[in-house]
Amino acid sequence: MGRRILNDALRTMVNAERRGKATVELKPISTVISSFLRIMKVRGYIKDFEVYDPHRVGRITVQLQGRINDCRALTYRQDIKAVDIEKYRLKTLPTHQWGYVVITTPEGVLDHEEAMERNAGGQVLGYFH
Image 1 (cartoon, rainbow, N blue to C red):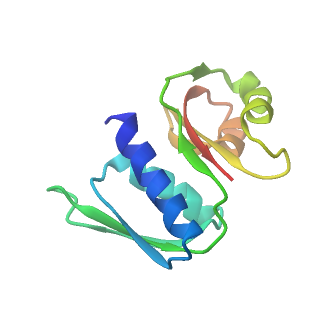
Image 2: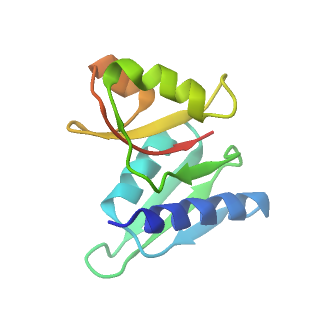
C-alpha cells in the first residue's frame, strides 16, 4: 500500500470538513485506511464509516463530526521504539494537549496510547488532531 493513497484519503477528509460537509467518499481504499478510520472513530473524531465492495476498487463513506483540525500520513517510514513514543508525540503534534500518533506495530495498527500500554514499537503511519 502506498502512503500516498492514505495521505490523499486523509487530506480529502480534512478538506471536506473545512467546507462543512457531513459525509465524504474515499477512493481507492486499503485495509490501512480502514484501520486508521477505526482508530479515529474510537477516539471520537468521526461518527462512522462504511466500506463498500472491498474486493474490487471499493470506496469508503465517512460521516464527519467536525472535530478534525489536521490529519496527515507521513510519507517517510520511521521506526520508533516503545520507550520513545512519548518524545516523538511531543515533537510531532503541534498541540501537546490533544491528538494521536498512529503506529503500525506487530500487534496491528494502534494509536500512541495503546502502543505505550502494550509496550509495542513499530513504524509511524501518521497523526490526527
